[in-house]
Image 1 (cartoon, rainbow, N blue to C red):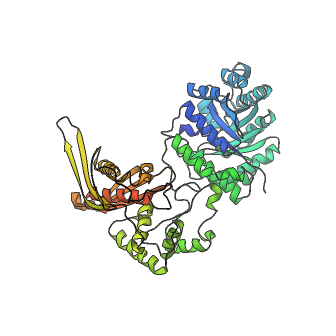
Image 2: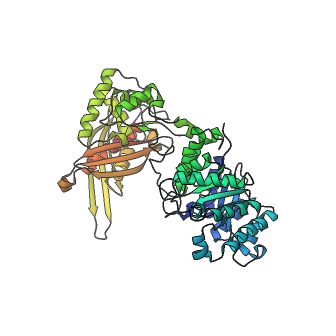
Image 3: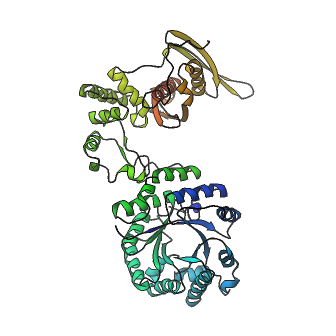
Length: 536
């Protein structure tokens, strides 16, 4: 096992600078616990003196017990021409209960001239005085050398002097920051090696990169290979502009591929769940193509690929999905072969003959030529397998359905659906109102058969998407409807395709309920359809 690499999370400070990301203090506290649950070593809670929400979070954290992470307060070096012990922000950090303080200071002469407007020697004193003041107050200090790689490119000697000043003043860690995210990996590696030689172990070396050139993760990894032993970043790569280095990619890369000791392997299995939880708290749509934790990270569509995966997963998977808490997905499409059908059938508790699998493949190709898309409709595909192999059992037999939509003088639109169906020799007629045709049909259908199939009460529709397949035909175009449903344990997709949007919606709706009642998903005992029917 290689040396340990500590993980420093700045989601709640640097990550909050990303567009559209804003959390309450209570939501930030949930993120803190999620990060702590992964076993990260540092969690930066924000600017202690920046805003009321951050101040409230630090107050909340005083009453919390974390298992793995040290809480970090972020701040800046002292103001120019002000003693460190007279700087109000540094005073708040010194008096706080947090064990670790992170100070950011200038390194690049461009910023000294244009931003802080101090000379190079005063900047060195600002760095040293601020760190010495906090270490004197009993704090462990992480020093973030802002724009370090730009500074190193511009004036190598002065950039190294800034790093050395921080280490000599007592900083536990000196972090090299690619603040503009513009540096490429070879420059990161050579500069990091130079600083490692300069500090000679007097302080730990950290790396903090941004993703403006698309190299945030790569830059963090090459910095570790060059001597850094602490990596800063954010969950899911949140951050200003193109975001910060993504810890959900960096951590498994360092641990699973390079053998570094980052976090407990048993905690790494929570990575996918935690990444999605933080997205949910931040109200961010998860990136399906994100490495390791994205929905498509271990999704296979090509028939030859799936056949190979069934023999040896290493053929098309670079790591075991279970190591990061992810699931393997086998996507069905016109590109699929019999291996895909066999694999999916086995996942749902079925065993097929080759002839049955071949017939399913042919049917999929036919339907996809008409606009179906089964890779997003696993529930409909599960039913298709059963329909083509003779094991399909419908929940009911449809006699008719009717939908009436009425727009009234006051502007309100009222939708009413009536269905007539047969279940177990009994005829059911139900009418229901809804906020649209799909909602009204769903209510009417559940009212008709909910007592016969109690598990339907656990199934909820969570997404409804419509796509016009041939816009040139205008209102006569074929419509594809995709529904997502869940029973609280599993989630599945279903599909309907028709020139009539309500018919397409009905087909997807029925599939969503029938797929939820399959033995592989139904977690409740069904009542037999021969039981006495509910009053009609």
